[in-house]
Length: 163
Image (cartoon, rainbow, N blue to C red; front, side, top):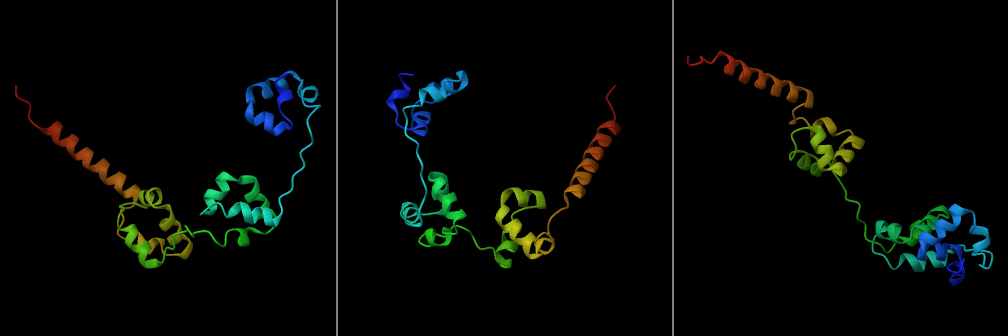
């Protein structure tokens, strides 16, 4: 209880001294411990969101650092205005770039894992088969590997043993 008296807001206490806050909640003392605290009612305004967003260079950076503000801007349809100054990180994947990127991979699954952006662009735009025409089908690849292993096993078995 004495720890809680150091704080004016529940959120402040929970953030600064999580262990004592959770202990009070677990033991059912939360209402008693926070009775002296002020109610914190907060609403983001468009001006506040604009000011907050100006501190960041990308949407992702802003979203990670100031989630509540980002969500408020999204819910209130202010996002376009708030991110107007930010760098556009989203890469453009025209067909030529997708074709070039796909050449780095031998299967679709490798491509998907290695370059999801180009893979998804090709999928969305209907270029997937064209971009992947040089690739080995994963099923055929496994079958080929199995056949090669079987041939090696046969070679080992048919090799005459010295007696």
